[in-house]
Length: 130
Length: 384
Image 1 (cartoon, rainbow over the protein chains, first blue to last red):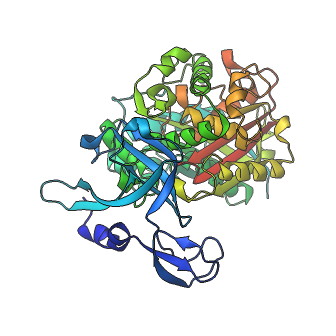
Image 2 (cartoon, rainbow over the protein chains, first blue to last red):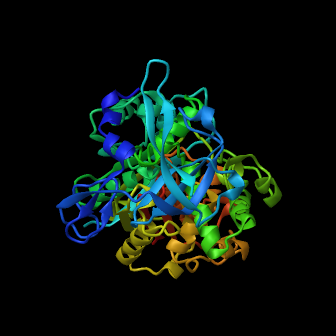
Image 3 (cartoon, helix red, strand yellow):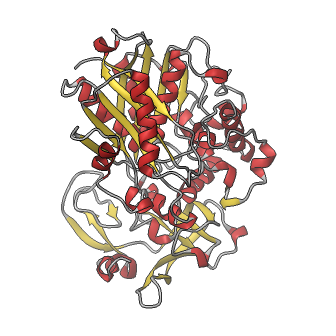
């Protein structure tokens, strides 16, 4: 089981959707990086990730990895957010028959999974249909 | 740089080998390769293995395996690049011989995947994805390739039946490979109706969980020329990386690392794709082979599904892909796959491939990739 520090240091992204905007080319980076993959600049200003976007693709996971067995089947998708960032997350509160490329989604703060009885409860963002 | 040849190949039957340990699986294949090469002494060994740590709780693998093979104190190196660990081991062995640093190098690949439960194996394989931004959300490898499939089907009209045809073709080929894990023929209907794993992928779209190893012996081509067997040279090697998070790709329906690695390997060999007589490629999922045929330039972008439907990639087609049965039928012990591809190509070029022999094959290509294409290795082999 990982120590809580691994989750703690990711709280700015998972809880508050903190992103960065490159001072060179203006690209929004989420998660933040130390070097912009577009222009190579290393200076950024803080910004917040756009909370709405549209699905580029999706799947329904029916055979889950360790830690997610009790959630299956569940949908996961990649959406392009309105600021151009592409993001992977579960798609919830959505009947599987509604899933399609182009579906408008927004981000909501949800429980992800638990490490076990004495472990950390993980939270983060999931997509829900707009 | 010196020219490099393959003088020995070794591989044993793959499958769920509950009675065998990782070290015994590796040693069996390595001994076959040494015997095939007819060499007494090896100067160095390189082993590809993705995750002995998660699968059997064992690291420090290279020295363990040189010890098990009773070859201490030869320098032993383990390399890791997810499911392309074997292809990367081959490239590192090539570099070692080409540079003049070593003469005879054993290149091996191994994975022991059935000592853990299915969900633990799914987790271990999942570590080849971005753990913080893909794995955290419950994504699996079938899930990632399923998302590539949905995007490809949506953009290009690739069909469910075309995905199934990849599996049917590779099992047809694999039925002629006695070392394959699943040497059984299947039908499109059987694939279409098999258990769902990650929509639209079903269990028969997926390569299996496999225990297995493979090994080859490399040496300078002028040394190989003095031996009895046909000389098979490695004339091109290409390697490229890409983002490991699928969401970071500019185009999730395109395998840029494979396209780049192939371009480099073919340029080094001075060959065009039309010069190649057979291809062993990384069909970890049916959609992967469709996208690989496009990235290699065997089919136009978006037409990989039609290529399999029209028989272009069948064993008697214009561009035979995966005559061994591929990962799909032969099995996919992840670290061993890239080396096993080389074993098949060498057997084909020597004319030793039995019922699945492609007549007159003199030039073959292997394509091995890690994750969803975060790494790719391409090698070109030619018979002199």
